[in-house]
Amino acid sequence: MGLKDVFGNKPVFRVLDFLLVHRDLDYSLSEIEGATEVSYRSLQSIVPSLVKRGLAVETRKVGKAKMYELNKKSNVAKKLDELAIAASFEAAGRQKLAQLA
Image (cartoon, rainbow, N blue to C red; front, side, top):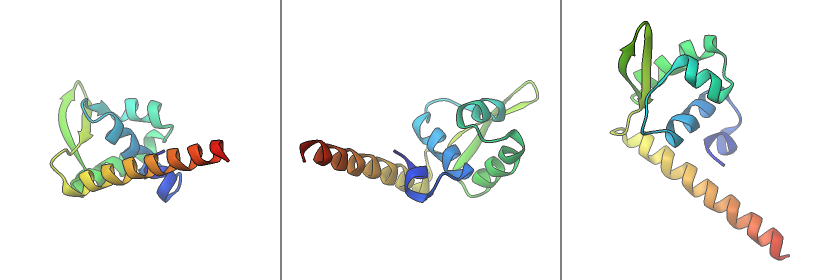
């Protein structure tokens, strides 16, 4: 369960979910594409938009590839992480209740 489960399975939320879960490393657009199944073309607009909004940061370049990670200093990113965690706990609770019934 993550942001995509709260807001809908839209590419931007799949990317944010990926960056939230894998916050300790940086990734190229190609790596994000493989993990999220969001097209490279879409990522070319989504990721710079996240950078512009302060949710992601460009960390370095490896050859021609730019590397990105979650902006751990962003208050909005922290709140989105809290929301994703809360949604996961809520879903787990509902599942547990369903098993008990």
